[in-house]
Image 1 (cartoon, rainbow, N blue to C red):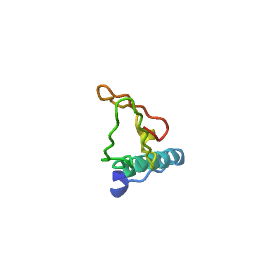
Image 2: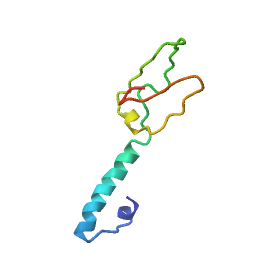
Image 3: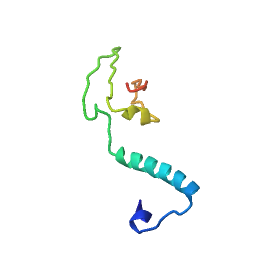
Image 4: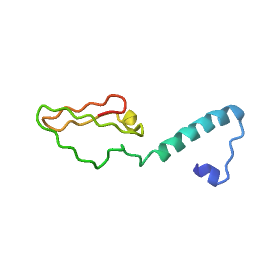
Length: 82
């Protein structure tokens, strides 16, 4: 974190525990920032009435909160599958 690079320290133990937890969470978010679904940039052709299920092998879909369905297409997420 920037304040660590600048040499600032957190002296109080109770605050330090929460700080370490928050720091780990921020680092996890930063590490996963560029992670995309394993099927990113793949193309699939589906005929009218057919269903296609695509799985992502890296838990990316668990972080997706909302999908914009293209007109005439139903898309839903269940666990790690679209």
